[in-house]
Length: 374
Image (tube, rainbow, N blue to C red; front, side, top):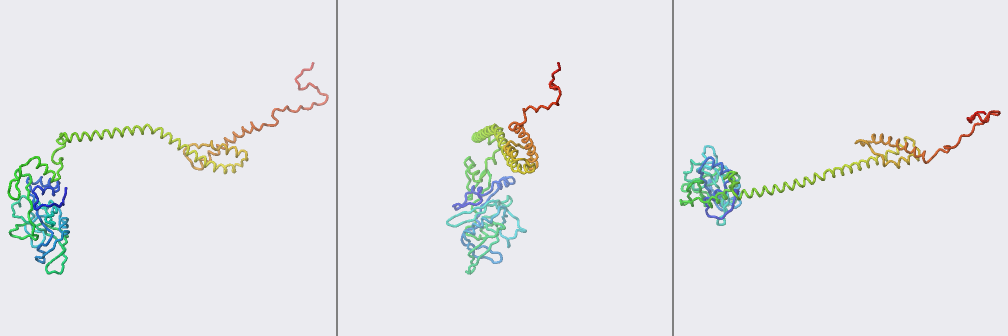
């Protein structure tokens, strides 16, 4: 929904008013007013204007295009609308007759115009109000020319006054009512009092588009889904989502099947890495143990050759644990070494007969031979 727009029309069509009012605002007003009255006013125009400056009287102000654009920017939704100006811009003691509900920029005949869209409260609709001007705090840049201000800066807008142009002259020559719409009337009339065309499908479409009103704001969910266009679209989206989820589930199942193998592989790699770390640390610690135990060179060489067989038990990898288990490993390998030594280095006395014991003279030569005397 656009709150600002630039368009090239002398007068705004009545139904154009709705496109500059936020849908939420329209709904809020509709709940409290069955036939709200909206009026669009020109409140500023590029060029010279003669407003009443509080404390200074009438001054000629030269409004640049940037100042008109800033005027629209400074307009705040909900700003109060008053009937006629007061002596000051104070709101105290004044009764608002409406509020600002939309704003726009209009570009006509080479000049920028500021448009204010107002909602007029039901009890004030009969007031003669065909002109409007802002009540604002402005900063003026004097030029040295008598009674002329060449630059105007709008700092803030406190209110908008509407009035009868026959009794009060607006500051801007073009200021005035450009469009009026009483919404949701069975019969509507334009500014010239001519009856508007009767309600039909095309006018309903135009109204909904101009107010940026979504179908869901008009119809409930069952009604929308019962429309074949909407139903087919929703069904198509559901089928696409179902297909996407099925594909995702298939991919997930494939991953699940691969996971045990990947986990086993990862565990094996982890064990191998852990063992390599232990072996590396054991090699570093072994030399110290060899020295502590004063082991001979041959046994050191044997145990060093067997170190790749060393495996740590448990999950602890601190030095104390490694050293304890490494000592046990060295003990087992020394026992193994002793066996090899017996095999490859036999006892030189093994298998020899013992020397005979000398017999005393005169003794029986068969003594000790197990032979009985005959």
